[in-house]
Image 1: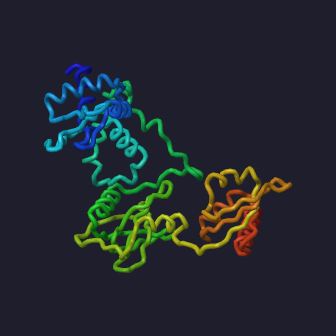
Image 2: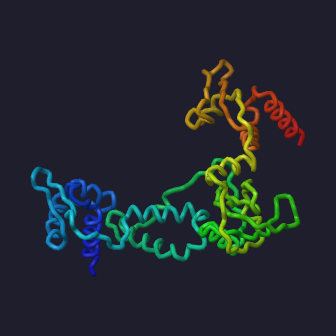
Image 3: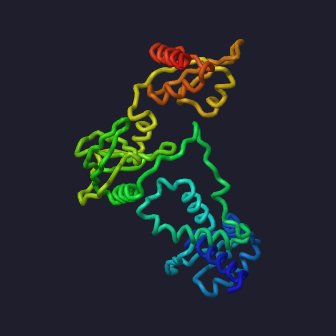
Length: 334
């Protein structure tokens, strides 16, 4: 088919897909706006001509009782469901492939490849994109700390763990804990994945314990899927593991943090607060501000504070202030 015919067919498929079933209706202007978002710039008049032509082939109807006319599928029309992909769907798929690669199910990547290929073809055929399907190359994620290269994860381990999480099956793992040389074998219930920077963790129950632990994928030496179902404790949600991983495998108690910072160092906290109850005082003559916030007492907090060096002074609580001072002294002695 000629490219012009393909463009027309794709545009009309999108039009038909966008139409609601009566009594809900859309005007030609609304459909034109929808097409523009999908990369097809077309006038309202051209949409009306297309709809008139399509109504001779499909059970479409126009409500002509008032202007602008509203278009819809007839109330009793058979369900319209043709396989296809819109430009927006294509953009989402390719962006997910580029930036969520480590969280996509590795055991299903083979089945996803045709979708990724279709997404590239879809964007390449949309006139407004000019054959350019490089949206993912126009989106970047900036790290909030020193960027690190991801650790090497055994491909067989990755696929086996992802498949077990996907299917809800137990695993037998050979795992080497951090700082250890000898490995141990565990039977675990894998419950989900958590990404922290370059490292991916699998949240597991070891045996039938109620305690959930995050295990680093790159420290798993081998993994075998078991036939038994993985069972999560009642009320468990994978989101509850985010703070565990971020805190270095342990949630700390809530503390009231009071600190002095130079105004320049604190600017980002005006836009991205430490907590809902954060307060920042007016700038003092010495160029500093006082910040208070309720936070968790974790290793992550210590490292964050140490990263500011002499530009932050912890005032409360006393234990945290004392620990940070001692760490600065030890660092100076190196």
